[in-house]
Amino acid sequence: MYLRKRNRLTGTPYRVSVVRQTMSRYAHGAVFVEGLVKAGVPE
Image 1 (cartoon, rainbow, N blue to C red):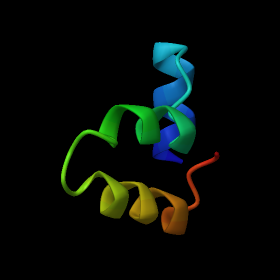
Image 2: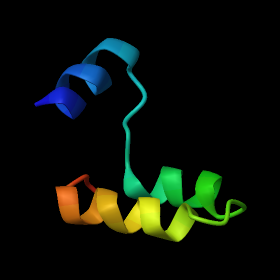
Image 3: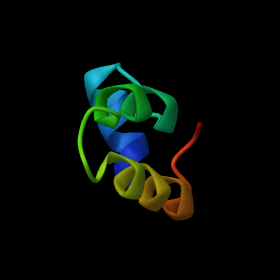
Image 4: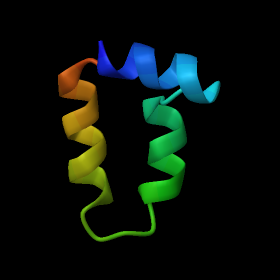
């Protein structure tokens, strides 16, 4: 529900693929992305 509202307000979809690119340079980026996938954030 939060992501639908956030995407509607900002216009930029929050997707795992976008976060994966951004977080890849951080030590815990893979763990964060895994959490998003488990939470059902779209790829």
